[in-house]
Length: 543
Image (cartoon, rainbow, N blue to C red):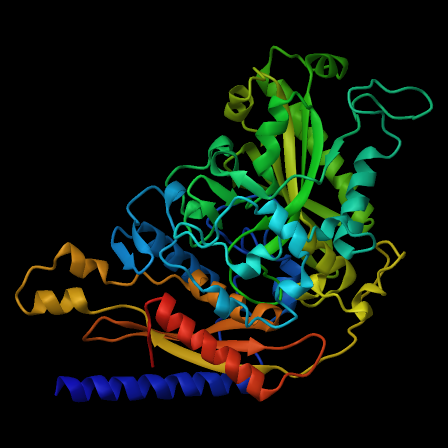
């Protein structure tokens, strides 16, 4: 009877999944409930850092979305908080350890599987020499490294340094705003510049390696040791003490210790994430920091013995400067400030602009946290910091519909931006059909449950067989197989069996090339590698 009930339940689930797929096919979008009128940010991540997340305008305009954010955050927190020990062929790792030293639960793909990535997403589109130079001395095959070949191939591409690339164009507008007609760093200015000493120029850094110590990426910025963002499901680790930076803030304390008072940092940052038109595991940020000397504060009429007076002045200077930068990018737009929270600034804010009929988050910022200032040996000095995502701004400014386009080498894309500054509206040059493939699997084992049901005690080894599935691991596997042919991965449905407690997930993988038509044979081959990789590396049972 139990077997019959399970079979009936499985059949019902498959029917529901098929019905859901049909609904989505007819409507052209996921059948999800209405969005809240406003959320604090367009994309909620466990780690709030400056300059990441889809623009709110893109989130509203693009009806096709991945898994619901709230469900995703709950699953992320649940997976990271688990205390079970997962055993794999590569080794055994305890998830009860602080996330700062969490190691990957498995090696996602071997190099032979990763090599199946097409030319759109594989190493052929990268600079192998630059990537090899950056990764020299690191062993990507060691069990505590979760940097896949696909991600490794992106190191050294430096899109923000390529002339006429839209990301470089946006970066240059920001740099020009903070440096044009302003005196040199540390200079008091002179008459011919016409600039006030209260708006000194900034040192520019866009050459830093994305490989950083975890201490600089997390600890120095007051990110708690048990924070979910430190887990291997969110961050790429080369080893327990070294990661690919998740934000350009990773360089903030280093530059402050060097004595710099004003600097801008731009670079590529890396985060394991969902897959859709506005998310990519590699994106680019610009970070700005300005510290105030006592002389500057006194000259501005600030009582330097009054910490609140100093904070108010820094906050006013920050907001005035960033509003000017927003106008340089978007023109004369309506703006508003929203109170926020970041671990490394206090108080913290987000700047939103009213652009093309809706409010859009532009950047995060705040007064540099007092503890950070003291830890770098700057005493009671005060200052501000901001950060923004270049892709987010470029997608809105240029009407770029898919974040993968920034990585294409197709001349039809790049010729539209050559020598034209920010006054460009991207014209899609092709729209090739998508190819959809579904995959469903059970994500948890019943070993422990069976042992208990038989009257025995669940051993530590039994509990170790319970698979702590995390959806970011599946996204990473799909990307490493399909590269930039992967347009989107959508969770169609999940189901928990009422008797066994096992959970089933059904995903739809959308393959689409931006440059050519795909064949069923090549996509079938890629999908088969996804299925094999999921079963072999993620500990799931295919359905």
